[in-house]
Length: 107
Image (cartoon, rainbow, N blue to C red):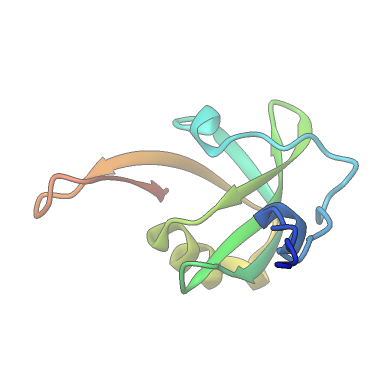
């Protein structure tokens, strides 16, 4: 007789990561485009796709939020200011002249 093995769900076998800011509402990066935010804390984490992504504590319109950024341009610029926090920044969308791809950047 063949023993049937239960197949687990992906979500059940992947390691669970606790939120870095459990008391804060997470805002989607796209909702902050062209809005000035204050970056108060930055956490650099390894990405499952290679490289790094950021989970940050930001202030937007007088309220604190958690936000994630994974774009290479954003990660590289925020690495340069990690020791100068807090800083004001604006997330913008740009279009690559080479590929035509739209990406996030910060100013």
